[in-house]
Image 1: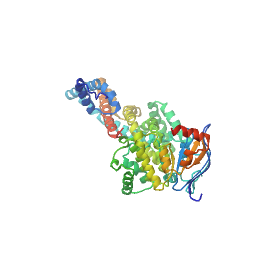
Image 2: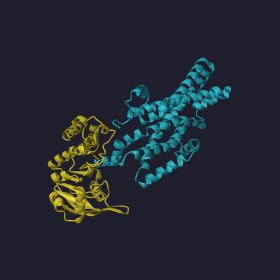
Image 3: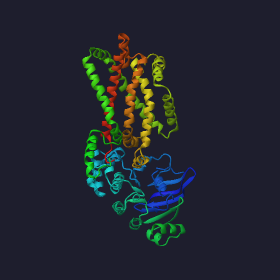
Image 4: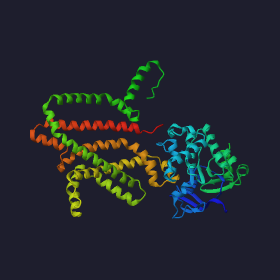
Length: 245
Length: 279
């Protein structure tokens, strides 16, 4: 508990009549990788989006590294700079080159000088394996390359936490591995990660815990080996039987 | 466009269409223009040739042009100044229109709906005979607008409303994931607007912005009601002196036409230059 970088208590979120999240409690330790699974509409993405306050929670409390996301006075921009997010649809800035995509927030938010920001960008492109694409435009890249740029863009802020919202769901099968490899590297380096994904291989290799959600609630959480082989709840079992083939 | 076909007989046709595409833009609108090119170019060339000959050989037309040309400067001054101001008003009001702040939204909507519902001519009369005198009296003579400034103010207020809607549509056309990505990196709302949303929106709204610029150039002829010696006013002055309506209005129409056509070409070349790569 002392070193829980994410602390969520009693989190609820409603969209009109629809209750997307009901009374969620979740802790994530520093350097931990947590994979969130569950049927569509179970609230996984909403949970992730509440963590960096892209959605404002209806009730409950979220504390990131000692700072309450949910209190009124919090500087959300400063907080979001510490929490990287990778989206299902990449959301790269199409009017900017790959390099500029990675440089922009460093300059605008972190106020880094251009040379330093570009150096960081080149290093990160190296890290995600596409140094030669610095001057390409997002529209000229494959989905897998775009997602790796998106990861590099988030990492350039040197975040404490990385959130992944179905990062491989929009990718062709042959491109999934190149993205998962980058994520595995990140996990090995000790990045704290919350990943919404049904990639079981990744979960097995990188996750310390899998959280199963359904109808806006956390049904159960356990290490991958335990959850896959001996789920405690019927709903978990039913869901796993559908995705594990 | 999809006829990168491999049948042997198609090569001549393909070459033709490639050549055409080289001259025009490769944007999606180009396909529409492609069908239109022949007749409007033909007509313009014919009219242009006729006019060139007519003006070169007719001392009368030369006389008209010499007379109305000072009006061109006034027209251009009014148009450029008013459009610049309208772009600014439009941007601010457009941002208010997409704002989640209910007061900003209500104010901007009120402005747009009121101004859009009043004819440009009436707005100009308001600017000249209501706003300007009130401004003068209200400030104890501190602010005294000249005729041209009144006209510019009127045009800018009127077109600000149209441009606000253009900006709003452009901003709303950008996928919300763009704003979310920018915010998730720690940018403020205004930073995200400035660096991520607006640069993309501008590209989307360039054609309607160009249209409105051309429309404003034409509507600037309405400033004649404020007794401003613009192109049209000078033409009418000439006609009232010489009773030569045919040559007078021909000349006025022609100068407008040449300007709008040039502008339309300019807008296209800007569109092409600004198009996003890899799209």
